Length: 178
Image (cartoon, rainbow, N blue to C red; front, side, top):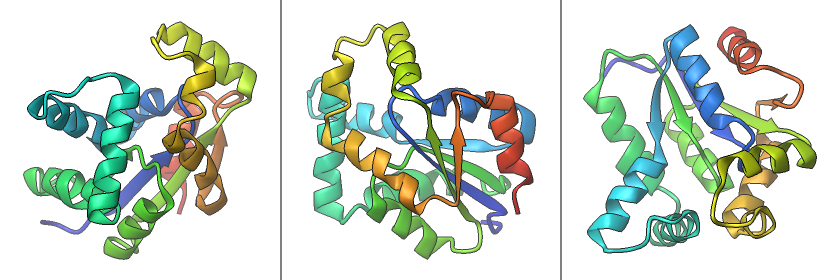
């Protein structure tokens, strides 16, 4: 595999705009992406588990405990990198725990760039309502993963407020940051 030029780790609360930013980074700046949700959904189906958001979060928590948070790097990211060795710019959508960030930084020290997205609670609540998720916002934000994800702001290399920054602007900030 060719060495990675840039490995962006995205974190942030639910409905902050991670997916929208991922799309902008891919279309405007040539990033490829790694998503934990596809892996979790496939594993949940194999285990005959629910595909509901909280069920997938619980499955991720179980994998965190079983692997010391390495599953995202070892079972999702590395196989993705290996499948497209010509790709040099990657985005992981999303990291949720401090230890996950540490593992990526340890494995890809020079390339890793952690970006935390934030927005006001009012903006997050409005965006979440547009999703029509079965889980009420008040319940979703209390989940351990959501609390842990929000805390990653403290270790981010760059923090972007998606309430006042468009996805295109944020993508440019990330692509141009050295």
